[in-house]
Image (cartoon, rainbow, N blue to C red):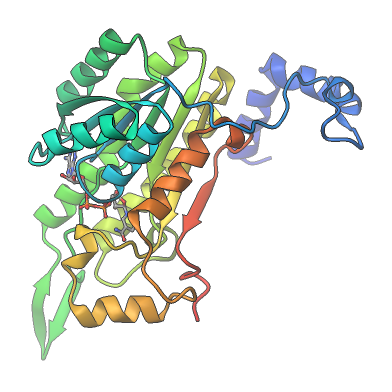
Length: 305
Ligand SMILES: NC(=O)c1ccc[n+]([C@@H]2O[C@H](COP(=O)([O-])OP(=O)(O)OC[C@H]3O[C@@H](n4cnc5c(N)ncnc54)[C@H](O)[C@@H]3O)[C@@H](O)[C@H]2O)c1
């Protein structure tokens, strides 16, 4: 038995809930999925999102996917704690959240700073009594080839600064923010953590060593936290967007953008709302048995045309 198998096995045998589940396995087989009495689970598939009044922290909330997500949760009547390093459009975002039907609390938060995320989480819990959902959305790109070769020597390389800045926001920022918020989710007897990965975190991408490493790391952390936090009734999942039309990608050359659309079987870029709707569903009661998953929102780009 490998070290991994040994540690997995000892985890299983030390969890009473797992033993109970195994003992009762025969009772869990039912021909009728709606027959909750014979499966011993007091739960029916939810038809409502269950998000009204829930406290949802969204990082990187003032632009792109984060902004669309803030507004989508507001439409469901959620309390939206919008965090961003930039407060440029914060007043406009707060008004839009309120108009959409939610409550709003914006804070300037740099996810790379432990003190920022910890004091912001404490402030949200103080204002609204706790936290129910965390969406780790903040992210940046600093693209360059690892080594761009010209003639007999390197023309350029990905710099230390490019590596450090992207890893700091996209990977360490997700770690710091989640570590700051999890105690509140445990105190609330459960919650949801969703993080932004990317299709490139699964498949790699030319010119994105730093970004790909950060997004692959988010996928790894998601699966690890799903194992660690499931026993607290905290569901942990990631989304892997493909090509979504936001400021992050609009900065790319037109011919690169066109090539990405051409490679997407649905023949278009995704919208921020496409990703926001996925976050909403994953956070909702309708996704109550989705855990440790990485959901692609990519128009089929990974299959190719
Ligand atoms: N747009 C895409 O095609 C695409 C594809 C895959 C994954 N993603 C991921 O989705 C997420 C959102 O991307 P987007 O396209 O909406 O980007 P965007 O650039 O439009 O918005 C990102 C937001 O994050 C904020 N931010 C940056 N650094 C921060 C920090 N240190 N602390 C707090 N906030 C910070 C920015 O101010 C901005 O408001 C990112 O994690 C990105 O990697 C995007």
